[in-house]
Length: 157
Image (cartoon, rainbow, N blue to C red; front, side):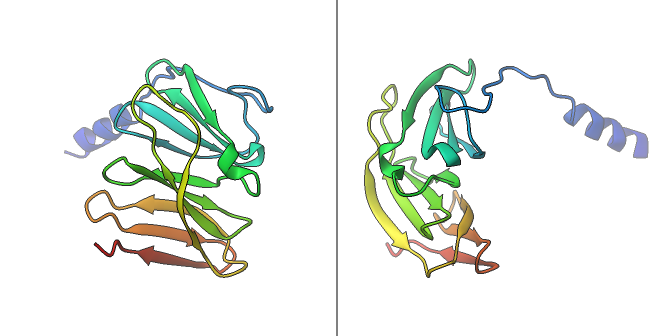
């Protein structure tokens, strides 16, 4: 029984690299502190490229670059990005401005321009580092390195 359990773990941890994007830089497919990765239900990989102040988007199967959003991040780069359960919005944590930005997610096949729908301004020096979204309830969880705390936000409707 123990052997079967160990075999299952070893088998589970056996992965094959399918594609790789980088290296350090400012060009297409290059990164300066790739800080967070999420995948939408349409097969796009969204990477928070923090020091380049942008989100880069790739195809999950091929790694093909699909687009970049930078216009929403002129003041501060994204440190974490997650989708809402309905895939209509992205929740983006911005560390240095202590802000969460809610961005309109693009339709399938279009990356388009970044559109800020709303923001949640946190207290100064809160420094939201990572964000996650409960896919059942829509609750947003924020880990903050400045305040050394975790906050939960719930939808009002």
